[in-house]
Image (cartoon, rainbow, N blue to C red; front, side, top):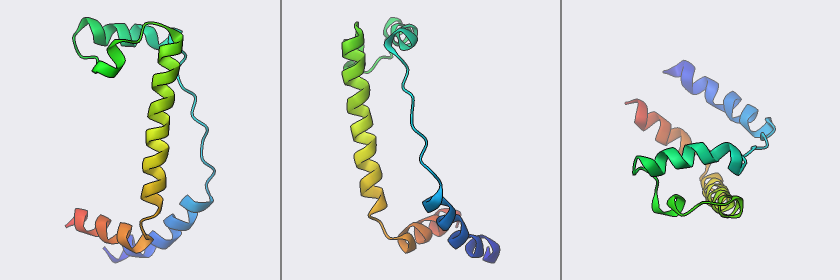
Length: 92
């Protein structure tokens, strides 16, 4: 346990310096088969089941990207000490 705690500051420093990868979203023609498979099996969420054109896919994927970015910004506001205590509680 002490080893894990001693590595936490080093891991935190590395995470802050590591470049963020640029995501590449699937183009509609790449995602169409997956979307159709979900539709056929009744598993497509309602906000996905209406997508039938590239413009619909583009709008949907960009909205999800904004949600993820917002959540990431909010998570970055949590002090490091809080993250460490949350991690320790999950280990117990």
